[in-house]
Image (tube, rainbow, N blue to C red; front, side):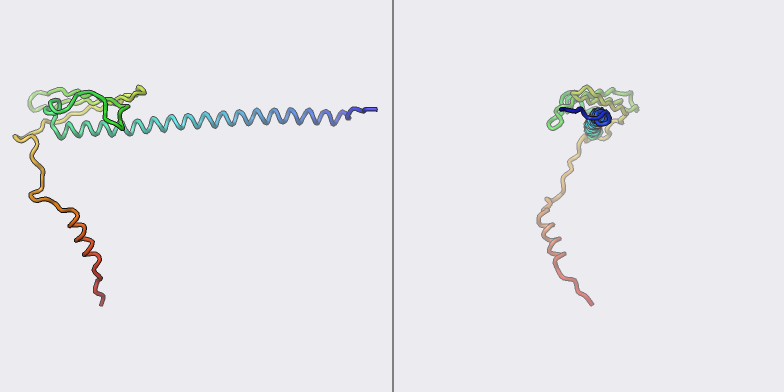
Length: 163
């Protein structure tokens, strides 16, 4: 004769099953939240990297304009284009408005990433003064860096006299 388990045992089995299902659901919700936070953190980190690179590229453009002079920059460089590798995902555009005599040039530099993000810097740059646009900046005599390094190393290798 087969007997069925007592009522208490059946209820405990049913409760254990419900308990396991609830625990599985809680675990799934927790894992989904962690994965969501991880992907959000990754996208924010990538965006931060793009912003740092774009700021560096804008700084490079403006430094070149400052060095060459805002009047000569358009003659020497393209006013728009794509950066060389490893920054090939960025493109740039430069606009220089000539001011009246005694008024600085208005310079607007824009850097765009292929993701659609755009970064812009606007500033005023005074014209480059002087007759000679780019004076030669070469030493009067050649510099022998290897000889200077060997001389420095030889000087530090000599033992010091101690009293």
